[in-house]
Length: 424
Image 1 (cartoon, rainbow, N blue to C red):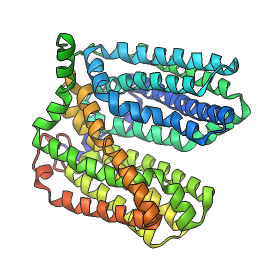
Image 2 (image 1 turned 180 degrees about the horizontal axis):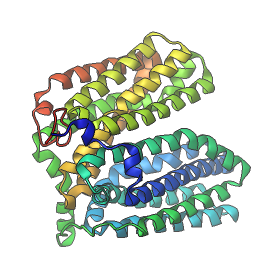
Image 3 (image 1 turned 135 degrees about the vertical axis):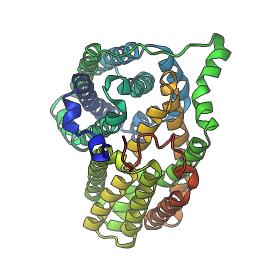
Image 4 (image 1 turned 180 degrees about the vertical axis):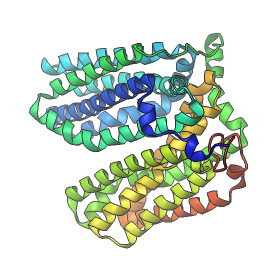
């Protein structure tokens, strides 16, 4: 008999796997490049148009395009060899970014051209992401043991890049012309493409149905796979509601800092840094300890920790206490991400993994606009303090509900690989 402690590998073991270390290095380079591109293009649009609204559209374009295109592009990703998609997406993205660089240094880049480039990069990213999620289990020698910590390390790396990248990126954009910062992003895509060329990735692909109707039928497979399983069906509805209630927190920390903490933009920056740090810690923790708890237990811990922290943050409006509690709240909310993603990757058939992951992400993200609109109305009518406290209370209630929800507790297939008992 082997215990769970023996079942979960350390992060050092993962880094010693050549394929994963190459995969991980590519994600680091590409993640830093993405931050440079976002900062440089937003600054460029702001400096050339002097319009906050036009600047805000730069990150908004990818959000809207995901809701519309995620599922059909997930279908395309399932139909093609994963290595072709990973390399091709990075090369195409590098070319697009290179064109933006040339337009910027020639002073011919307009806001519309920046938006168009962002849309094309979003399309490439929506092909890349499901292919990456589908390929990751296949480069690990022991996916049952190694997938959760691999997801944890990749997520923690992304959080670390977010935490440090905007500060470093701001300095690079300030020191260099924004166009030169964009050039660095283009180089990062080509370096990432080279990293995937070096990997041996099985050429798994789904059998494609013929014609437009066949494509639509294939596109719906991920949604139907989720909807056929009662636990997944309940989970996406439950998760969409939780996401909807929590969506305003991601946007209105600036308002909370200004109206409640009276800390202005500095307080807003501290809160965002605490959130990134909390997400980093949660990713490493849940990736390493994923097998200690079943999935429904992670749900309870995640929702209760996040909800109670937000509630007390609103109850005791002190800057430094708010920073600590917001970091804990973000960490709590992030604890579920790695076990949930890992469970879905293990549960989904290999030839459908891209569509299942894209469909699941669509279900969760589609509720965000409703939450943002409702949150914007509530914050205007009742204030930021009330909004944060009510979101905290709803998060705590969600944690209690998940504790007694037998649908989650009794599904051994969904909890595959997440069992606190010993395993042979």
